[in-house]
Length: 147
Image 1: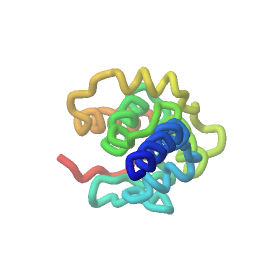
Image 2: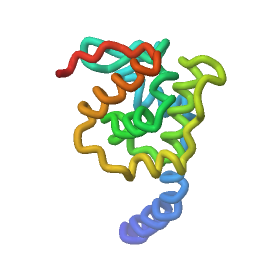
Image 3: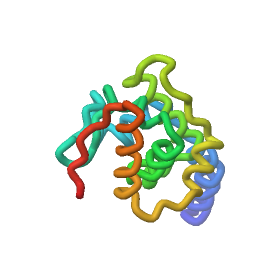
Image 4: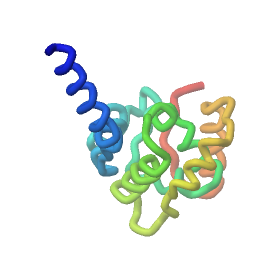
């Protein structure tokens, strides 16, 4: 009898697995689950720890190919365990919530896929290059405490 119950439970779980793995959250929920721990509910980050705030700065980081590449390789995105479509949605949520309306090109899943496929050997060095590029373009960038 116990064997029969185990089989029924196993079958039920195997049938439910596609539904459970297909669970998808909204961009705002994914932000809460995967980003707010470092960047905060208010998007203010922890500047002393190298976690930048979003208000005033997000539009610049959405503005160039290098800055968009950088965003796809920051540790929080690299380890987010989200699909490329979900990452694009979260990035667009961040831009809409803390950026100027209409000031940036939205991310697409295809762009996220392409940018994540490009190797970045040193994300800190890329961050320095992006900061310099954005400064020269007139964007304000947050302080970055890492050498």
